[in-house]
Image 1 (cartoon, rainbow, N blue to C red):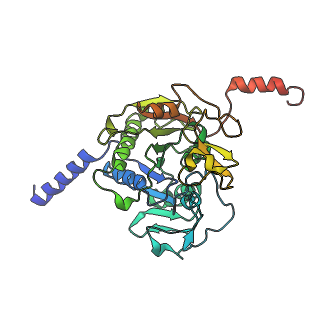
Image 2: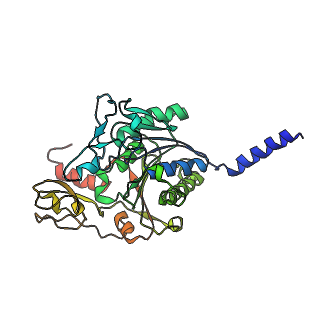
Image 3: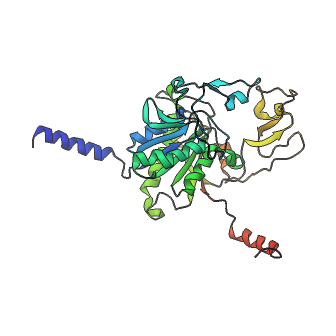
Length: 353
């Protein structure tokens, strides 16, 4: 055999040895923006594991926008300044300039990262960007829908009561309802970090490794779910707790329920400065009203009590106890269990068929 043939054979053998048994076409999205460190670290780790990956995310951080989208409204060009969630959380309210890629200002509202053609941005909400990934970006790259969609890892946990307000989790629901195996991932670290700040020891890489291990396990056990990564109609809401550096991959994975427990329960405050989340940003007595965040189980100034959830299997309580990575199986359609349906039929029998 010629040396060139030996080299070629060695290259093939090496590629075979390092490639995963089930290489996947994966779409990544989030609600923290296309430059978020967690997003890019996961992209890098998944590609290193042999998967093909594309990213589609909003230009800026739009945490907490839930499933919002602008219907039948063309995506505008990217403005020079905008008001984002961080400026709205400060006093006085001030616009912020686009931070990482100022050369995007004035450009089309949908495009590719100048440094990576596999990363797309959308001047719109998280679910708008996610749908661009599903309907346009992935088909162009993969020739069809992705094998797996991952939303996140989010900057901050999404558990229980807050999930319906989360862009990360609403992306998950849209993926599930498109019959795409989907995972929403949220991390306890709330720091807003750009991918340009990533270093070898960044927490984002440990978080990414936790997700890659989960993806590998799903792929290796496809036979346990009828040849699919997950049964049709369900997905996973995954929350990663706080952990010491170097200890992330040792965390156990714990099957949980979504429940209601959360450290981020939204509530309306007549005095916004009295919201625990406003401390240091909005002074009490400033005459400002709006939505604040508090803990499930707490009492509002009005006397209203936010319902508590003390179940040890609820993801919010597992994350609070820092006992492991919470993995909740969720459905895309919030349909009631059969027993509740039958109970309501009895109640509505006089007027409903």
